[in-house]
Amino acid sequence: MIEQFELEKYTDQRPIKLWKPGSSTANPSGYHGRRAIMEFLTMSDALRRLVMQHANEGDIEKQARSEGMHSMYEDGIAKAVAGITTLEEVLRVTQEG
Image (tube, rainbow, N blue to C red; front, side, top):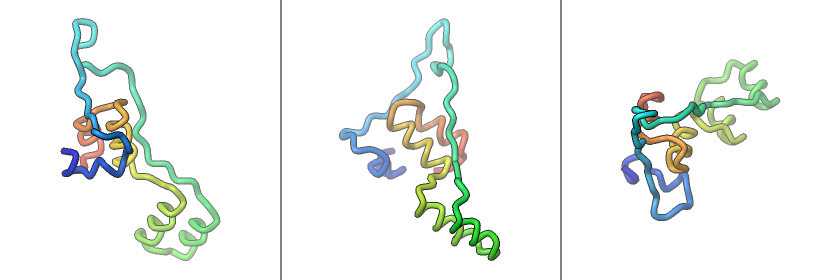
């Protein structure tokens, strides 16, 4: 899984650990609470210019990524390798991979 999903680029931790939820009587699913997996884009002047020029999606995404934007999938993978959620849950909600 580590190679398949290129998890090395999301953490400096070695070896990479992936977590599974542990169920209990009080919490049968093994998950507790909710954490957001998000894709957040702050509109900069450069991005605003591209939108106003009707630039294609690729050009807008390239600029957004150069300004630090991460996709929902990437945010979820980072949270999975940090032990906040599981890789399976990230794949389930993002339907990627």
